[in-house]
Image (cartoon, rainbow, N blue to C red; front, side, top):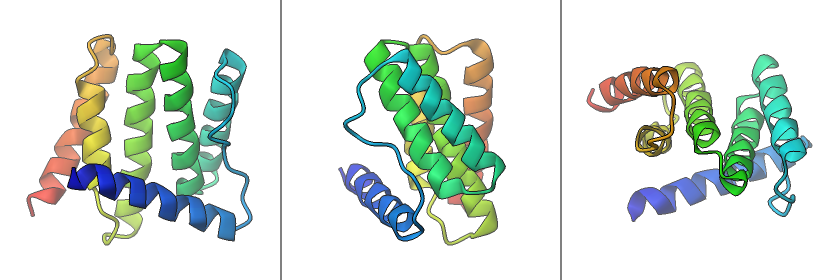
Length: 136
């Protein structure tokens, strides 16, 4: 329960930070469609490439929401991995960033039976890093 509350608080803080920075952000009311999934993916990748990790995280979470609505569990697993990786990248830049939300996303991704073997391998690798850091 505490983790769920923490994730919600983290998302609110990240959204507020993006608003304060004047950045575009995904709309929670965006209809589910393949076009909106592709748009969320493109924006996440754009912001990631620009080093805007908070914004990239927001779009990866929208990517997950779209994939869930489309019933594509394979894409949900990749989206959870990518969102977690944005948190990991932020942690590498700022060790005060909590990795618990990344751990939760990775656990959820690993629990998805439809995840490809490649996706499971990447999720597990990211989980190893998170577990190592959290056990320090």
